[in-house]
Image (cartoon, rainbow, N blue to C red; front, side):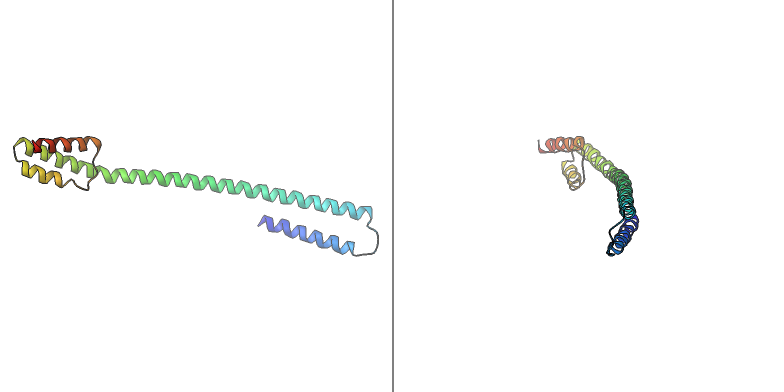
Amino acid sequence: MKIKTGLTLFTATALLVTAVGCKKEEPTAKAVESTKTAASDIGSAVKDVTAKGVEKAKEGAAAVKTGVEKAVEAVKTEVKSLTAPTTDKAQEIINKAQSLVTAGNYQDALIALNSLIGMPLTDAQQKLVAGIKAQIIR
């Protein structure tokens, strides 16, 4: 909006200079000085508007960055809350399979371990499953 004001002021000054310059009279020192002052004022106004626009853009970028960081943290928290129950359920199944192997019921233990397919497992859980399968194979 301020850029439009600055450009309007510049255009008005240019029209004024053009209108004054259309006379066949030689420009007076006062008119030349007035034109220089107006041009200087326009230049200053354009610089001010540009500086303010850049500052607003920086503020907007900072706000967007903060919003994105908050959204990323919210997603991370949500993912953790969604995977925690799954790993707990997987641990229950692993414990059940371990007790079945201890009892000598290898077929049921293998069925229990197969129900883990598609569940996210921690590294420790993966090692436990591999160990139980090794016991079943022996």
